[in-house]
Length: 335
Image (cartoon, rainbow, N blue to C red; front, side):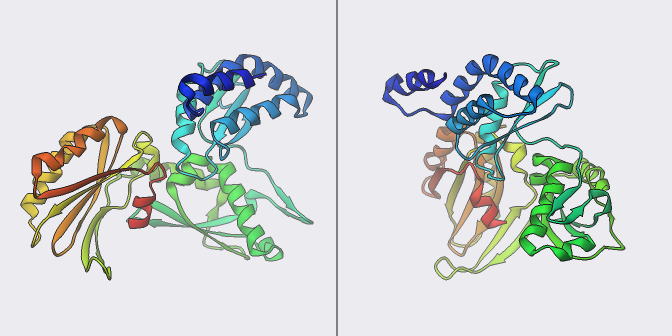
């Protein structure tokens, strides 16, 4: 049904189909597809509609998953999920920005939305979320919540199943975006936690934590490197990828400094911030004996302006590297 559209997009300029091309095709097909999906939902059976939905989302990216859920305001919600891959979350955002307006029938979400948690049956064990307790430990340096989740019936499950059950309960309760942004470590214990709070109260706790977060938690970390030598890393550990979905490139600005010169570094950093404007965020600088490196994430639109720092500050700024990093892997490794 939609193959010729994809093939036509593939022939334009002899370029491969991009995610943007596939998103365009998706919404061209949606008017017809939604009617078919509504029929299948009414009948309680998946069929050709969901098969075509899978093909359309696979064309955007094979790692993206879809979910059909009761809507928050409409009858149905179509959610795309990055499946915990931060590199795919900007793509699902691109998809929802191109979506039609929500109506009484359908609404659209770039991540899985919360649903009412239900009891989970694993073999002959049935775990109800109202019986699960959680201990919440704030990680102030990352502005995340570390969780310890306990239930006596976890003792009857192996560790893999314990984690699968707990993550399913958390995903249902919080939805994908809250889970990815605000939950840090998750530990499971096979016994009740008398000092914990009911799992069903966790969503309110996460909302309060998110409302009070600053996104600015700078720390100094002493690091050792056999090749580059010792360094002092000054890094903001509280950035959330969800707040900067349009920033897909990591920038490193290398400054030659024989001994750390805070005035020079601040001047270059100010020049970098001016070049970024609202299309970038500086998240760290790292001082070695002979040089200092500034780190930032930027949108593609300011990449050329950032590269010009080498001309404005030569020879003190001797290298500006701009590289794709949609998963923010560099940041996660550093923090």
